[in-house]
Amino acid sequence: MSILEHFFKLKENGTDVRTELLAGLTTFLTMAYIIFVNPSILGDAGMPKDAVFVATCLAAALGTLIMGLYANYPIALAPGMGLNAYFAYVVVKGMGLPWQVALGAVFISGCLFILVSVFKLREMIVNGIPRAIRTAITVGIGMFLGLIALRSAGIVVANPATLVGVGDLHQASALLAIAGFFIIVALDKLRVKGAILIGILLVTVLSFFFAGNKFNGVVAPIPLIDATLFKLDIMGALSVGILNVVLVFFLVELFDATGTLMGVASRAGLLVNGKMERLNKALLADSVAIAAGAVLGTSSTTAYIESAAGVQAGGRTGLTAVAVALLFLACLFISPLASVVPAYATAPALLYVACLMLRELADIDWSDSTESVPAAIAALTMPFTYSIATGVAFGFISYAALKLLTGRAREVRLVVWVIAAVFLFKFAYLGAG
Image (cartoon, rainbow, N blue to C red):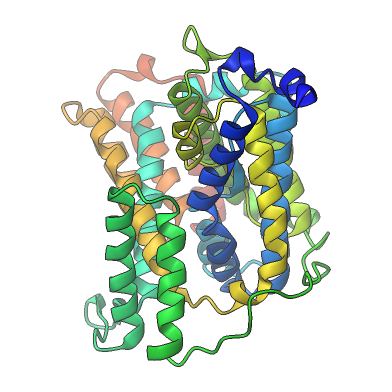
């Protein structure tokens, strides 16, 4: 205990071992749904689900362990929601690129993050992006996730006359998904720990009775990861045609992780004069986790806002994160349980996460059309073009164009002009694919 006290500075942060371990369990329960959701989403991209399950657990454990031991923050990491959807449904299925190339793009974005973190450029880049665009990216990804969730549940289907329509709500899968969604929302509102995980598991159990699902057990030897380990194609990702993919991964990871780190640290009372003392260490932990996750075989790893649940339970140091990491490693032995979770069981979780992301709309300045219109364009075009990359591109281009046309070009930071120009070049010379 004295070693833990000395290493994590428990008394200095007003906590103890028991509190930190309970906080770690709390954080884990709120984010453990990712071990079921991530293999399901990346499996749609043609990746072997068993290997992705292992990669998800290892990437989460590794990233969280680095955060705890190196940065000493009670913040957990795992493959990010939204980023995995972009990886699977836009890059692989939409653009037709092999998942190995997509992993290469994730790895490159992680390496770029390591560079900007080492040279302390990350905060400068974030500050240079308009708040409206940052908010729009979060909202747009939420809408995109919502569309994916409704489709996975069979509630929204393709319709040749109207593009989309309502599916057959008499199907067991749709009814179970609807029930699961309301259960998750109700449990979360009642502050039940692990509400999302409980909802997923409950729908999965009901699927054995009402939807013909088959139970394969709970515990088994750890599946092999060789199907995804070191399978990333870096050279393919370096081709000019995938420029926008790397850029979107980079931008979304940038805002998502930095915002989450600051938000959780603020809630934990760990900010000094509004700043994180060890921000650069936290950013490096996040950056290394992205690159390592790509090597293992999963989409971008990022800091999880669910870490706030552990903070609420008293977590204040990296010992909380270490506890979460050990729990993710323990999950390696429950692969049979992960393999029987159907898409309509994880769909309610996706939809609820989507709903939570839409609350960011309140942060947009709706009185200024040069701010609100680009944000709306970015958010709307993500689900309607089925492309997060296109939404981000339209947002930056329209922001720069409207500021220029209204004589307010001086308000636009250099980084926005550069990103808008890159996307404009991409559309003009490389097409919209």
